[in-house]
Length: 217
Ligand SMILES: *[C@@H]1O[C@H](CO)[C@@H](O)[C@H](O)[C@H]1NC(C)=O
Ligand SMILES: *[C@@H]1O[C@H](CO)[C@@H](O)[C@H](O)[C@H]1NC(C)=O
Ligand SMILES: *[C@@H]1O[C@H](CO)[C@@H](O)[C@H](O)[C@H]1NC(C)=O
Ligand SMILES: *[C@@H]1O[C@H](CO)[C@@H](O)[C@H](O)[C@H]1NC(C)=O
Ligand SMILES: *[C@@H]1O[C@H](CO)[C@@H](O)[C@H](O)[C@H]1NC(C)=O
Image 1 (tube, protein in one colour):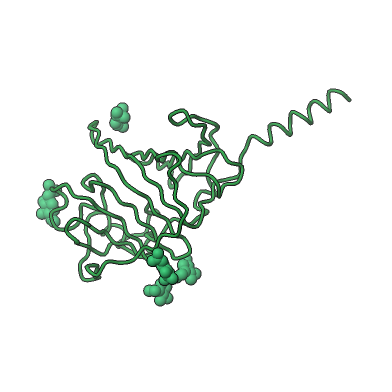
Image 2 (tube, rainbow, N blue to C red):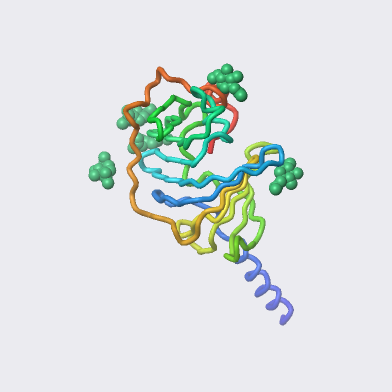
């Protein structure tokens, strides 16, 4: 009897160790430092992820788009260094270059280019507790394909909507999110006047327009 009770207590403790799967809050923005690893060379950026699920919009801005396979497909942005934004408005994705007010059309929701849905990590596997720069984190992996893991670290609040990002590692880059800096205010994300369907981005955007394979970040 004693043994059974101990087993039951142990089982309930173990059951509590698996947190609820991540769900992103509907609106927030958070800054990050990003590291691209291109043929063993490390390129660092600063950026901001701005998320507004109710309006199907997001803005992923980076200080330099030169390592981003979506950003290098317009004008000579494959050779020059310039800030670049993935601007997704009403589930249509654009590349926007704020310094020059240039913009090109990338791809749409049917092609996998809409916003990440708040529950896009429902299929993630819990990998355990880890620390990210001293902060305890829930550590998850979400596979997009057999060799395409997305690793996500987030803070450890029981309620997924109260958590914030600590780190994302994907393909050849990782983003370390600045802690305690999440902003939960509503951010309106609007399309600049320079964005026109006539200006099409090439590079990875053209790949997405041609074939639906994966979901773009
Ligand atoms: C960069 O990527 C290469 C190949 O995946 C890996 O061997 C190397 O350790 C990485 N470098 C850093 C600093 O992460
Ligand atoms: C956002 O997209 C969904 C489909 O994914 C649609 O049902 C909804 O009406 C859209 N919201 C707005 C505000 O356009
Ligand atoms: C940059 O893109 C242009 C086309 O937009 C292409 O002609 C050129 O070869 C590319 N340069 C590099 C270094 O990839
Ligand atoms: C958003 O997209 C939906 C579906 O594509 C469309 O019906 C709606 O008119 C769009 N809204 C705006 C404000 O463009
Ligand atoms: C954001 O957009 C909504 C709806 O279009 C509008 O009512 C609101 O005033 C806007 N907020 C800001 C800060 O621009």
